Amino acid sequence: MNRELRRKRLLETLKQITPEMREKLDALKEEQKDLEKPDFIWHFLLQSFATMGNVRGWKGLIGDHSNYVRVSFGTLSKLRHDERVTVIEGVLRDAKVRMPRQKAEWLSKNCDLIIEMGGLEQVKSMALAYKGTEAKISFMKRFYGIGDKYARNIWMDVYHPDFHNSIAVDERIKRITGALGYTFRNYDEHERFYLDVAQEAGLQGWELDRLLYNYRDWFLSVLDARVAI
Image 1: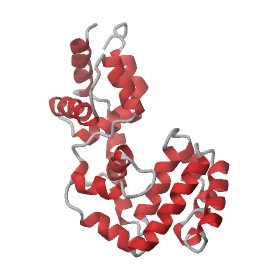
Image 2 (image 1 turned 90 degrees about the horizontal axis):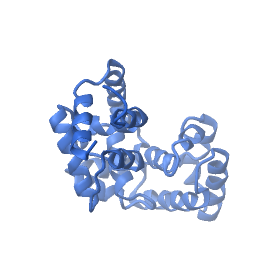
Image 3 (image 1 turned 30 degrees about the vertical axis):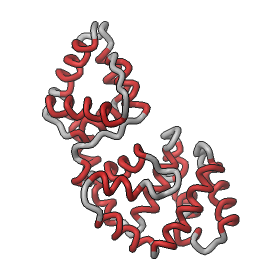
Image 4 (image 1 turned 90 degrees about the vertical axis):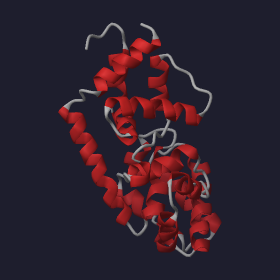
């Protein structure tokens, strides 16, 4: 099956997503309430590093309350940088988060950065004041360890209106791209491809992104020419 036929196959599937998938999207949209968290920025920095490299780190850090409170901003901000790194690294190792030393350094530096900016509430206000996707992405990239993908994904995790037509191109989506038979020269070209697919399927870019992320293996099976749809 050539890539255009695979693309058509993907489109046909997206136009008839299951009730379970629709319920999942609705539940994820409810996470917009996380924007109300006073520690919104710190929470999503922790979540980004917990999942960076392996999503299993989420369960050990964000999903484990005892580990999560050990790296709260209020606790860590009282420590010196070297003390903070030691504490964070220990928690990340307990939580089975990948690259614990590097991420501990990043988080400690980000703690200092937030303090320099005026604290959690001030940083949150600054982030929300930026207009448009590019400005909000640029702001998030000021934090150590946060690149294009996570700078975009942080906003997508809270279903921010500026990111309803965005794609966070990660390894799972790249697997779909490979199965389709496409290659792209850069991030923007890659994102544009999926935004066009979303539009044709009658979906938001955000909805397509979350579907491909949460149901990657299912979509990969659909793209297998041997599987009937």
